[in-house]
Length: 410
Image (cartoon, rainbow, N blue to C red; front, side, top):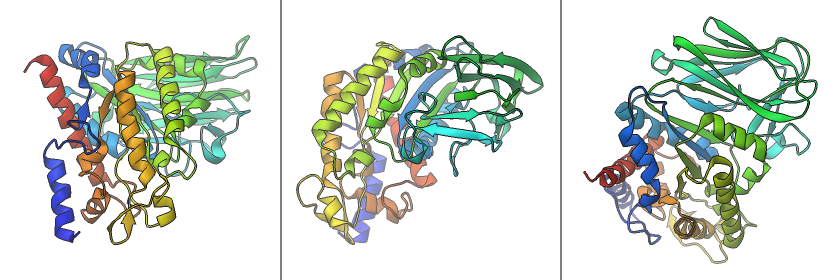
């Protein structure tokens, strides 16, 4: 395929709602399952609580390129409702938080759901994928907005209450509150704090040398707007959500009250040398049922299909049990990646989920190389640049806006 053909195909895919090559008649399928979200969006008033979209996923979600690309047009159209839910502090080097800057003192240790951060004997983990624990006085976790437009007047913090736990001081602007986490039994707890005016900074500081474990930290506006929370852990597959504690997840879903849950996994599954589509199907079914049990059956779920991606490793590219065809310059799309994506679409229909075909939005199989040539993807042909994230977010926003208009009868 020529360079010109690659660029033209990628540009065309981004400009119009092309049909999904996986069989979905359009990029956004089964949109009727998003009707409660669309109705809430249409009925939103300036004095209402912010509408909350909560996305859980892998590095695409963790890096916030795609979610920020979606957040920008959403909030331009419907107003800013806050930065949303984040992991507490900076759970790893390079932690990226568009719109706000997170900080922490050195005395915190992290338990996460993947890689070296994971310890099954550690403090329980919730929807952020990380829990931060301190055992000394004066340790802090903080957040500061990058610009005034990201200021907030409500924070919500979720923690683990347990026997012998310490006390934290919650600060928001010039206000401060003490929160004792000592309890007769171990249980999750969430607490909100509000200000009469928007502020640019909030923090938690340990008041003593007893154990304090924080599972998540969110900043919001009390009234109006839309929030897009991105809770991603690099390297994860959907199955790693099983390491998140049910009781913590339930408490956080109740506290953060999402109007839409978005699941965005599939890339790491598609590059796996061990996974089968049948294992993935079981994982997806289990986690969807679990989210509905913990967050409520009435919360709509949008499943985002895995994007196109590529490798030059022929053995890896044949991970679906058959050889992969070469796209361009030796790049190949792993065959399992396409199988996983197709299974996502099939399961979305079976489970009553909306499905958005990210691969179709890029132009289908082999489109990753064209996106790389446009500098929308990084050299690994897997991860997106900020510009690519903005483009994907724009396409997703447009597809959802069209579906919302149809639901309204426009």
